[in-house]
Length: 176
Image 1 (cartoon, rainbow, N blue to C red):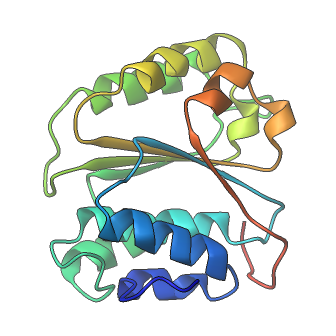
Image 2: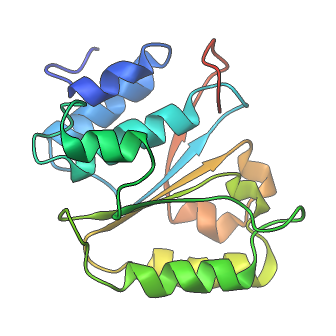
């Protein structure tokens, strides 16, 4: 089943039609989750999907992919869309997660919603994972989290259970 009138930004998900249609339906029905877990192998398009969803959420035109807001998301310069990567070789630092939580409590600057994309979410461990868990359980208003990970088994089960899981299949996209 193909979602009708999918936002242009979701066109980037050509290799993941099920993901594209799932997200388009959630957007059309105004049933977005506060937390998504995009799971799949490297190169499956998780980061492209995170960018596309962020565009759809912060764009005043619903994800047209061409406006200033969408361009800022694409260039990773939008003040309400933050991309995080593990702060060390072994994973996320507690200080990183605490900074994210503090920032999430602040109002958005340019849009109605703030989006946090966490790359390599399987590297959320120990105190860092537990710090994020409370925020996922009781998220600030107008905040969305997109966790991108390779496998669910490597993640804290309570974090996984607080997110809407979106599986990605290996594809021909270049990043993960």
